[in-house]
Length: 193
Image 1 (tube, rainbow, N blue to C red):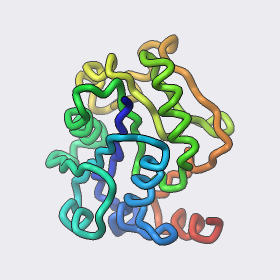
Image 2: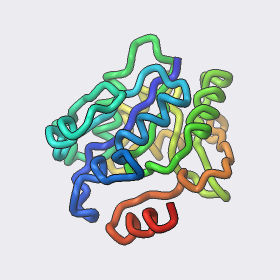
Image 3: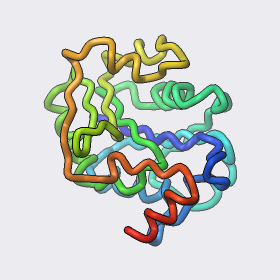
Image 4: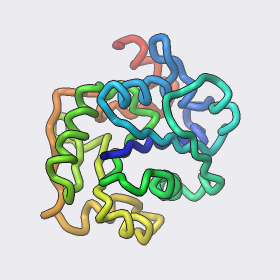
C-alpha cells in the first residue's frame, strides 16, 4: 500500500488567505486534492495542517485523516515528517503532494501509485515538460533519511543523495508544475481552468 500525504500547513502569506480553502470548481484546494487521490485508488490519505488548522478543519469535510503540525513555522520538512509519522505502519511508501497543486489529475496520482508499487525502493518524481514537480513518492526505505535531512535542504537532500534510486516520470499534466502561491497565479488558474 502507498499512502498519500497532502502538505497544507503553510501560512499562505503570499496568498493572504489559506490556500487549502481557496475554491477550485465546486471544491476547495484541499478537498479537490483529496478527492483526486481517492479517485486514484489511494487508500490512506493524511492531510497535514498547521496555520489556520481549525479553520481549515471545520470548513468542509475532506476524505483524509487530519494531522496538525504544531511546528509548521519550521518549514515544509517539519510537516512532511509529521505526515510520515502518521502513515500506517504497513504502508510501503508515501506519495507526497502539496495543497497548492490542486490541478494534478487523478490519472497522474494513479500512475505514480502504480509505479511505486512496481518499484518499491525507488523515489519517483513527477515531471511535466522536463520540470520536476509534485507528486513525489518516497519509499519507506528513505523515511529515516527524511527525518535526518537538514532543515534548509529538506526532502531535496534525500532526492539528490543517490541519483540511481530516483526515477522521473513524465506526464502531460501541467498541474504537476502549477504551483499557485499568489493571488495573481490564482486568478490566472481560474481564468484558464
